[in-house]
Length: 241
Image (cartoon, rainbow, N blue to C red):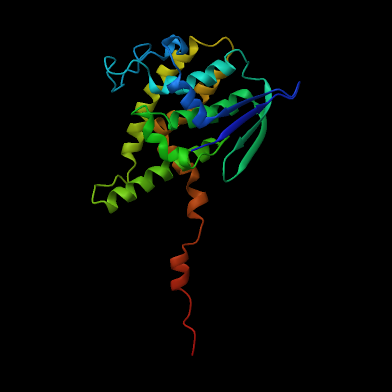
């Protein structure tokens, strides 16, 4: 899935561009061990719940995908204002904001497309990528994509989880991954843009684990105020012929 992020700095018109697919290829296909940062080694701050064996996997898949972005933004402060353009085949988004918010969206997309066995559970979110999403939008998309997956599981004859217990469990696993990735990136950063982007992404995903029910209660009026179209259809009087 090709999505281009452009960070345009208003002071001098300079630009940093990240192609999500290209970033993955550049990280994974680089020749020679010297091309990989030390913090991308699997055993370096390895996630406590990582299912990969360091004897079989020398590098962390998520760290390899993130390395080009971390290096491009490593010295930039999170508060620096930029125009961020997000361009896909279907549409384009633009926002004048701090580097942190743009990187939060970009890193979330890179992580969701990663070959990491745990982060790969986020791939459905990547297919409906929404840059600069709010907390409410994040909750709706997280729950929505999870329920769609349960529908397909039910159609395949598997047991579906309509109570969202699996979603809470998944996000607890993701928190451990986020914490380890933050430690990796911390060792590579001079500025704070990468770190704050990860922390802000971490806080959004943490809300699914700690306060999902409360978040859904807050959103309930927006959904339950809609008249059920089937009920509305049933109340219509028959047409006299």
